[in-house]
Image (cartoon, rainbow, N blue to C red; front, side):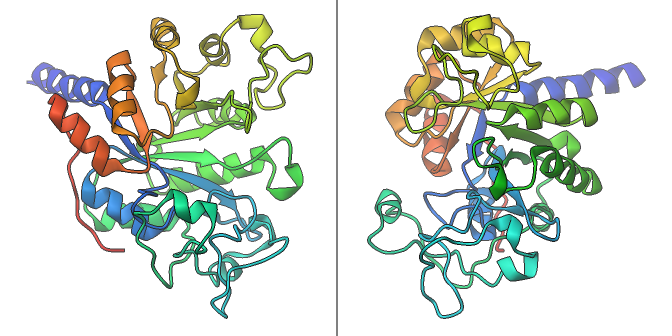
Length: 325
C-alpha cells in the first residue's frame, strides 16, 4: 500500500514537472493593470500555471509587488487624480501606507505605454499590493496549485534606488516561508547575486536566471572588456554561451529575452539540463515557434492567447479558478 501511494505521488509530481508552464506576466498585463490584484485575479480566472510578478521593498520592509524601482509616472496617480511628474519617489523611500495612497489602475493616456497595451481594462482605486495579499488572493480562489515566479527588482547599476539585493532576498524568503509557499515559488532575477543568496540560504526555493542581450538591456556583455555587473562574477568569456553561464552559476531554470533565442541555443540549454522559460511572448506565431523549439513554458501578457495555442496543440491546461479581488 505504501509503495503504491509513493508511486502515485511520484506520477503526479512527474506529470506536474512535465506540464507546459503558462506564466501570466505581471498577472495578465495585457488585460488588467499590471502587478495588481485585478491582474492576478484575471490570470487565475483564465487559468495559468504560474503568476509572474516583480517585488520591491518598502521603507518599512514590506515586500510589495511592483515593477519599477520608482513610482512610474505613466501609472501612478496622486490623491488629486493626476499622474505624477518629474522625479518620483523610490519604492524604498515610502512606507506601505504611503505607497498605497497612489492609484495604479490606469495608464496615462497618450503615452507609449498606453498604446502598447490597448486591450488592458483600466480601473480606478487600484493599489500596489503586498506579496502577502497576492498569496491571500490565491487562497481565496481556492487554488492550491498555482505557482509564483517573483522577480527581485534590484539593479547593480542603480543601487541607491532599492534595498541591497541581500536585504530584499531575505525579506522575500521570510514572507514565502511564513505563508508556506516555498515549494510553489521561484525567485528570478537579472541580478544573479540575489539567486546565489537564495541557493545558499533557502535551497528549498527554486531560482530562475533572467538574461537579456538587447541594446536596451544587456546583462551578459559578451565580447566586452568589462565584466558584467549583473552575473555575480560568472563571465561569458569563460563559458562561451549564456546557458553554460547559467549552469556554472548553479542554475536549473533559464529565462531569456525571447528575442535572444535560436533553436540551436534552446537545444544546447536543454542538453545542459536547463528548463527554458522565455519572456515576454505575446504573438501567437512566436508562441507556436518557441513551443516547436522545445521551450518548457512561456511568460506572456496575454495568458488567454497562450491557452488557445496550447489547447489547439492538445497540451494540458491549468485549472481556471475564477475570483474577484
